[in-house]
Image (cartoon, rainbow, N blue to C red; front, side):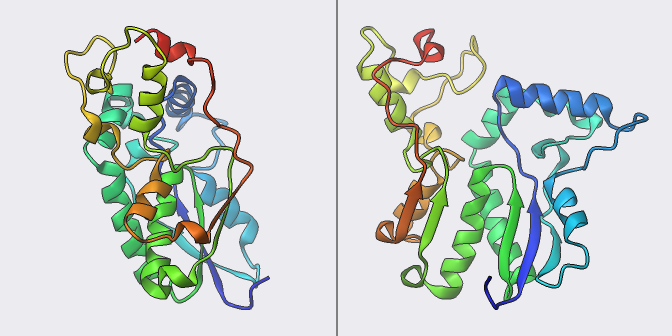
Length: 234
């Protein structure tokens, strides 16, 4: 264990728009306030309860985010929990703006202790890395990433590879970021907004992380020779 003081803090950001995540959020909203609702508000609360009195860690509290952007939204935010709204938030640069606020939070409320983040959405990692880079410089950071997914590939690059192998596929600029059937579509710039799937690429491009100081372990989402069925319907 590191001899430096360590401070645990929570970032319950959860902008996943896949059907399973949305079902969990809706189930959570339906259960909130009912008898027997003994679930924690977010992962940080569960960890903080276990860490009370632990001499090796200090509790740093929670980074503030709106309820609808969290893993357990309030029932009053139900109208915001839609695929379209979550995707629009990402397309408008919402995750990058949140990451910048998180960097400021780490600098003001966590340092000089070592930051230990309990989060949900992977993109929040960028806020902690940015704060560490500003404090210590990219040359002093070596990062080990244990993840099944390689979150360093721009989505436009992933999708372009799929479309090029599909005869008659629509051009990338017509890729629908919003709900199917919407007359709106996004261009490549919208498609590559900062998100959980490309945040390492953003940090590298911004000079916050040196690629030679990054080690990815456990990556399993290599390009497939087959088109994912969900893209074949586009």
